[in-house]
Image 1 (cartoon, helix red, strand yellow):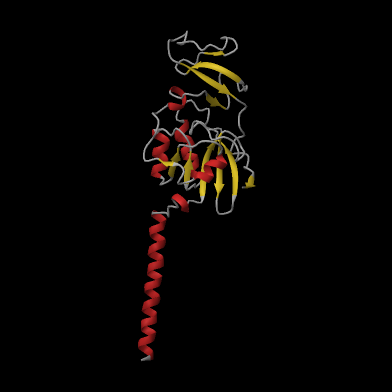
Image 2: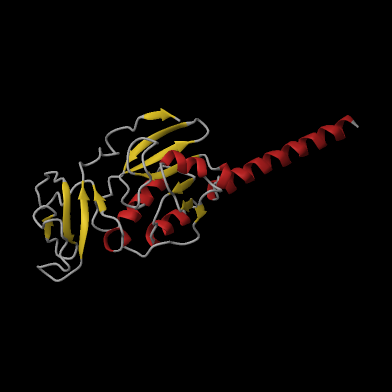
Length: 236
């Protein structure tokens, strides 16, 4: 009888070990998704470094992402080094958030490419955000709209936005690295630009150089490169 008990215990041990290993291998290829209320690390597209900063009008060109850890009740501001990228700002910003291992993203006006990147990484996206990052965190998830697809056309950040595009620097290559600040009217087709002051605060109907569409751009001081400066962690 004792021998049978030992055999049974050994078989149970083998079965438990097999289950643990099987689950480990499964989760390696299928990581646990912490969605909705279970989401721990949440990224919020923000206009500033503080959690009381307003949520950015544009997702891919948000100056900062507030990374909130709901378990530790801390947050840090990660500068978006892609906010003034001429092309694929949303895609690159979304990939940056994937690399930061966030569980969910909160932001307005999410285009096709950033949504595709986040969706493939099984990161949920929530929109219809108003007020500050802190208010958005309080509304998450039930007070926000969960996206199932993009909610604005591609290139919305430079062609279709109803608000001025905020850029961290303005054409730094053409200006030999100088940071140009202020409001400009810009043609993204040929890079023709004129300051709002020079134009008398009246945006030309068409680009005088190529006839393309003009866009209002707000250029601000460049954010600190997230790759060289460690974001400061703060408590909620």
